[in-house]
Structure formats: C-alpha cells, structure tokens
Amino acid sequence: MNVPFDDVWLQLHPEDQVAVLKRTLKKGVRVERGDKIWETQSTIPAGHKVALCSLSKGDPLLKYGQIIGFATQEIHPGDHVHVHNLGMGDFGRDYRIGEAFRPLQRTTREEPLTFMGFDRGPGRRSGTRNYLAIISSVNCSASVSKYIAQHFRGEDFRRDFPHVDGVMAFTHKSGCSLMPDKPLEVLQRVLAGMAVHPNISGYLLVGLGCEVNQIPQIIQRYGLRDPQKPDDDPFHMNIQSLGGIRKTVEAGIEAVQKMLPRLNDLQRTARPISDLALAMNCGGSDGHSGITANPALGVASDCLVQEGGTSVLAETSEIYGA
Image (cartoon, rainbow, N blue to C red; front, side, top):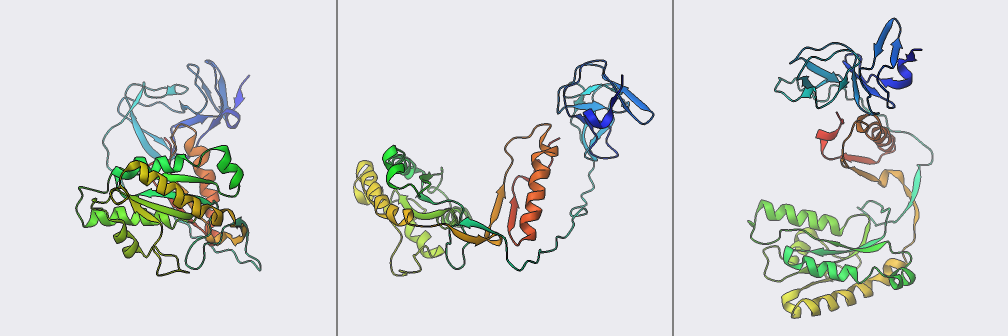
C-alpha cells in the first residue's frame, strides 16, 4: 500500500530535490504523489532528507530553494541524503537581499494590546522581569561580582523578596589592556546597556580600580544616574579602594540589600505591546529548525511588529537550518 506524500514528507520549495521526513520511515516504504512513486532505499530518520530525483556526483542540491551542498556520489530517488553523500563546495551566489521583503501594516486598534510588565519610565521600554544586576567593569572583578550574586540564591532571599526574580552577575573577559578608543567604547556601551536593560530594576557596578575601563567614565558617558536624583551616582565600588576581595564582597552584599526592598515593592501594570523588544538567537540547528522554531518565531515577530513592537534577529546565518 502506498503512503500519501503529504502524510510523511514535506517539500519546502517547488525546486527542491529533497523532502524532509515528518516521521521515521523504514526501508521499502512506497510514497506517492499524483502519478509519481518513490521507494525508500533505507531507514530514514524523522527530520532527515530524502531524494526526490537522481543527482550525479558534483550536482548541486537544493533545499528551501537554495543550494545547501553538492552530491559526493550518485544519488537516486528514495535515497537518504545526509553527510555520507552530500558535501560542501564553492559556488557563485546571487545576493538578492530583501527580494522577499513584505512590508507589514501597523495594526490599528481603539485599545492597544497590553502585557503585564514593569514601567521603567520615560524613554525606556517596559520590563518583563525584575532582576538586580551585578556588573563587573573588568575581568579582575568578575569573581567578586559572582560571589555577591551567589549570596542571594537561598531560601531566605526567595522568602524575603518574592517579587524579585533574582540577583545576576554580568561578567566578561575584558576591561583592561585594551585600546581606549573603539574597543573601550563598545565594551562600555554594552555594560551601560545592561544597566538600563528593561528587565534590570537596579544594579551595582564593581571594578578593580586600576583598569582601563573606569566606572566613573561609564557613568558620565552614558548618563547612568537616577533621574529622580541626578546628583547621585549609582551604586559602584572597586576592590582596591575597599581593601581586597572579602571587604568588597561584604560591601557589595550590603549595597544589594539596600536596593532589594525597593525592587520588591515594584508592581506589574498593563503595558503596551509596543514596549516589547524580542531578542532571538540560534539555540542550535537541526533538521527541524527551519520548519518549526524559525517560521514560528517569524510569525510571532510579524505579530509583534504589527503592534508596534520590535524583533531583533542575531546570527542571521542560522535563519534556515539546512
């Protein structure tokens, strides 16, 4: 008995020479579409590719209508197409960037869609979480930042501050021995961005003291001050001024404890969807990525953008999982 093509296989583009298996098929299964019949030549796992036509050694192979590799041996209809018979190769590309772009029309509503989030005030997006950040200015203060954050991971913290999602350490491997121009500017911009991220309700900056990446410069350059108290600097400290690691950890814990009651009192309110920014990054590609998570996130992004929100895709080379 023949199995209908659409029940077991998925051809992603009319020009594709392969289909993706919806479920594992054993050797000898006959699949039909119209007057065409294919027979699997081996057991092929779900998510893998099956050949729809013959290819000679060296022929390009299309999936998503794009060349994803070249046949390294003869391939016949019904063959399992994988690393044993498909390899990489050089070829010219026609970069028709934006050819498939379709503009989205902004949704018009009498009442905008909302979500329950944290109002961060004028000029900032609304948050979906309520974290306190420990931000190290240099690799030398990374361990201290982690020690401070680790103090707030027990049952006592969760009992006393149930509305705070956590205390997180943001560390890195830079901050010193770098040129005080573009590299320093990029690092400072990233660290300042963490401090004012919508999901961060409070922060503590921790440095060593002698690093190139000086905390006062970050504060001054990026205006890291409480708008209600413009003359006050944010909480910050450095290890050398305080006299060592232990004293800095103790001072950091004390500073965080002073901030936590204010964070715990913050309440979620109805915020417009247009305040949301969705950040997306590849979590690992497999045969299912391009037909499951990627298009689903694409639809979600379109919906968000139509409501005035923002969607940002990083690692664009993973936009389709071949």
